[in-house]
Length: 615
Ligand SMILES: NC(=O)c1ccc[n+]([C@@H]2O[C@H](COP(=O)([O-])OP(=O)(O)OC[C@H]3O[C@@H](n4cnc5c(N)ncnc54)[C@H](O)[C@@H]3O)[C@@H](O)[C@H]2O)c1
Ligand SMILES: O=C(O)C[C@H](O)C(=O)O
Ligand SMILES: [Mg+2]
Image (cartoon, rainbow, N blue to C red; front, side):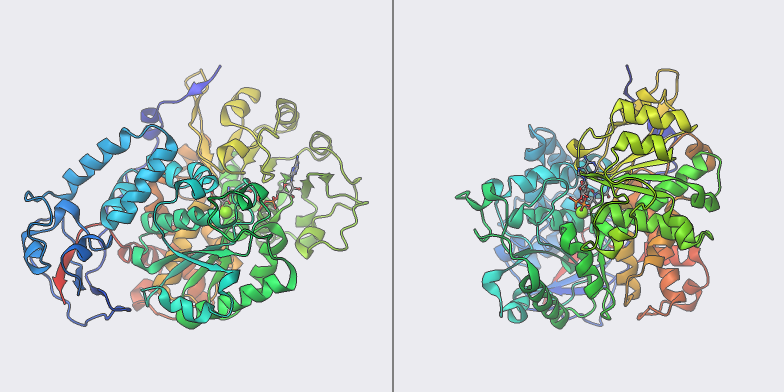
């Protein structure tokens, strides 16, 4: 009955497009030696073309080794001077082309790719070839390409990693490398690493244990740090910890690239993680470490073990998912004409009691407490289910984590079904972090709709196939009344009466890039829950009332750079207040949130060709 709304109509509601931001001028060095020597020389070379940035890169590379280094390669875009200085004469076609022409050629070829997986591979190969061109294209076409490099297509790319593998990127630490972690970190050529995303592949989206195949997840996340928050590409490091896999299909597959053994668990697993983090801290003491897609049995344990160890660490699935969930609930309050303090009156039903579901509920409970609710009153607002139904009275939770025990309902029978819980609790917000596609049926959503004016339905599971319901379903079942946000992207829906049903994307991509930007720019020493709460509040305020009233909760991901500057600003102000900043910005920056946001924006890397000079 409903069909997807045209993009053009949706864009009418959007505020001005992303402003291009220039990075600050600087000199870096890239070459065959290990390590970068930053020179103090900083001079402006008057550019032959306006499109060039002021950045000067020194290199010892010459001839084909320049072309084979993606961070130096400019393809047909090397200037006449660079061709002379780097001995490239005759090694590239004679006619020089600018970025615009290169983009045109690449996008035409991209459009000819037949499947989404072909598109993924095409972009991966571009990333391997030419860093600036890849990121220029990603930044300029973010909304179109994010679903390819990120959820949902990155999920399929992980499932088929062993079959489509072409070239290495990032680092692998396997059980066979034990006792070598502290030396092998020096095999990585960069002395400066700002952000590491690490996974052990034990729970990739809702696709289960993908072992070593999971490498595309850290690669994808880091490409969002660069495109969405202006982190420097060469200072990002994707890592897979290969501790085996319990995925028999992969383990027995002749092309599988990881260790063909069962997954290591227990104390020995923790020892491996300790050894790994010790090695990382030895080589890159300040790098932000993002734990990604670790299964729920270890995710929280690892976070608690490392988060206060004097270096920044966070778990994306727990904390930044909590952040976007809080932002979504806060924005939905605005949509319903309520205030932030009304969050304490929300009633939350959450399907999914893994680390993501519990992390989200914990973050919302903390947001309630921040608005004056007691811890007990906040807890009483939650009804959490796992695959066995409600976490209720009779459930033996003695071996469960504190995070899970906290949400046990002592007043209701264990195992109540989702529909029974909806009838009993009359929720205002329904969250899906179950990984079960289609879990929110017509009966469930209609039951919820009976008790509230505007049901808030957030099926947050990824990829799209795991979404608990689609926007078309929810808007159809609620006659367009619902407020909707999903983990993976969906098109908006035309409601048939001139209105649009907005399909917001409640994905942690709204928070982790901006957080990483702030940690890097200010060298923040520890990532705290208060930072995520401040970021959530900021995200929830980014759109004007007239947009939010229509059910649009925050700007679309196409404006991620702007959003990341705002998130970075909010995080930076909390870090300042709590004395966690190790690299103080100029005083005027510290005076206001606006000043901090502008500072974040100014420190973003911009994908433009700089000038390469011979070292
Ligand atoms: N939107 C986002 O930004 C975001 C971020 C992180 C995770 N996620 C998604 O959240 C999901 C869960 O992640 P996780 O790490 O907690 O995984 P998990 O496998 O540990 O947890 C899944 C939970 O769902 C429960 N469950 C299974 N079937 C159910 C059912 N029929 N009814 C109710 N509960 C059921 C399981 O018992 C378990 O508690 C994944 O799909 C992941 O992609 C989304
Ligand atoms: O990767 C995503 O799209 C979000 C999240 O980190 C997840 O694990 O689903
Ligand atoms: Mg994840």
